[in-house]
Every structure is written in structure tokens, then in C-alpha cells.
Amino acid sequence: MIVPHTTPAPASPRTVRTVRTVRTVRKAVVPAAGLGTRFLPATKATPKEMLPVVDKPAIQYVVEEAAAAGLDDVLMITGRHKRAIEDHFDNAFELEQVLAAKGDSVRLDAVRDPARLADIHHIRQGDPLGLGHAVLCARHHVGDQPFAVLLGDDLIDPRETLLSRMLEVRDRRKGSVIALMEVLPEQIHLYGCAAVEPTGEDGVVRVTGLVEKPSREDAPSHYAVIGRYVLDPAVFGVLERTPPGRGGEIQLTDALQQLAAGGTVHGVVFDGLRYDTGGKADYLRTVVRLACERPDLGPEFTAWLKEFVAGLTDGGAERKRLAA
Image 1 (cartoon, one colour):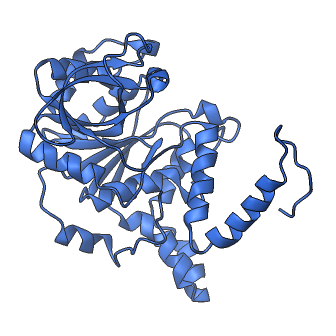
Image 2 (tube, one colour; image 1 turned 45 degrees about the vertical axis):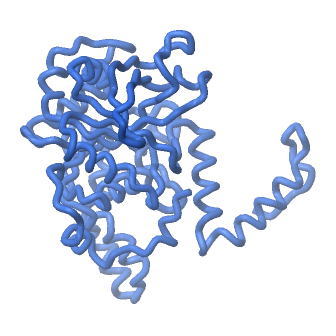
């Protein structure tokens, strides 16, 4: 589980980069232009990516993951009404002054940390034309270099090395690398699905085909694509020629399908700790599990949670009133 407060943090993100392996991939793209309709009305004026996961917005966990893997240039693809994301990753001079005057170094560091994670840039996706179009919006910033794409609905435990592993596979095998996770057959329709063949390397497969959200009967495997990609710049030319697909949107899966046909896409199979914050129930489970892991919150919150659950009937009705 994600335990950011039990994992020692470096004094400076810049220090992290000086000790990590030099890689050919240095840029990350974080699409964050969605409307967040599953969380209305909370997302009417607040970006879904800024909803708190305990005491940090979900998107900060994603940027921390990129920075920890040595990606020091992060481009966020945003949209209208997403200004709060830009503000969060900027300096807050007045707030910092107040906290400094109070001598509150803990909260001062927490406020400053987002802006120190990486060199963060923002552009807008003018039209909501899908993930493929959002990635295409990054073309001028990325140029002709490989780059990572991290989707904000997926949180990967910071103790996992998924992204670093994907970057290492890209360095050796070139082409594009996607993260795969084995799911139950009845869940495969919720994901892009990969047809794969072995490479002889443990945990690495060659992707021979991709289908966006197939039915259980049509799925070529149980391997679902999760929200981490390391993409070759060749994907831009393919995306330009990719027509709208499922939902009338330009699907990144469709572009990767064309690249996979040329044998240039590999998958890293992930069986570690991942949290999906895309739906309300998953989001609540993530917040509860994170809170239980926190040394400053866990003992008291877990004790209350046990008492609360013990007071529920099978139908979910509360038998006794507990202090909030």
C-alpha cells in the first residue's frame, strides 16, 4: 500500500536526480484534462485530479512517482477550469510567508514540495478528443525523444519500481513499453487488453495486438493495460493518422495497436500494489487504506474504523451512534 509518510523523502528532488542512472527518457506527460463527471458535483469547480487522497491531491502522487524515476521534466495536459492544478505546483508566496513566520517547518515543506519535484509545464487540450489526442498535444514539448505517460487515476505504491523497470526495458529494447496487469476475466471489459507472446525475459512480453475495452468473449488475454506508458516518438505520426474510435475519441490504444503490429511494443507485467481512484468506491477504498497506513493517523483511525464496522448490521445500517 502507499505509505508516503513512512518512506524517507530526500531533502531535495534535485539531489535525487544526481544519484540516479542517466536515462534516455527524461520527460513525462500527465494528461489531466478530463471533466471528472463520475465525481460530480464535487468536480464542478474543482479538478478531479485535485481531490485529496488523505492530505495530498491524487496528481501529486503521480508527479512524485515520475520524479522518483528520474523524470525531471513533467508536462501536464490540462483543460478549462484546471487552474488549481497549476497553482498547486507553483510557489505560494503569501502562504509560505505565514508558515515561515509561525516557524511551522513541517507544513512549510509540505507546501513547497510540489513545486520542487520537477520542472513542471502546462498546456491545454482545447477539445476533449480522448487520451490519444491529449498525448498528441505534447508533441512540440517532447520533440523527437521518447517519453513517459502517467495517468492520474492509477496510483502506484512508491515502494514499487514499475516505472523505473519500464524505462530500463525501453533503454534496452527501444520502441514503446506499456504496463500490463492480469485481471479477472469479468473485469477485462473495463480496460484496454493486450495480446502477448513471451520474450524469454521474466516479466517482459512482446505485445502483438491491443483491443480497447473488449467483451470477455473477445478479449485476447487477461492482461489489462494500466496507466503507465513509455512511448517512442513514432507514436505521434501514428496518432495524427488515427481516426476517432470507441466513444468518438482518438484512442491511444488504437495507435499502439499499429505500432505493435510492427513488433515495436513490449509490456512489463506488474503484480505489485496499485490503486484505482477513477471511481467513487475505489477512491474511498484508497483513502481509507492510505489513512490506515499512516503512522500519524493509522492507530487512531484504525481503532475507530474497527468500532464503526462492528456497529454495522449486514444491511449496512448503523446500530449505534459513534463520535465522528
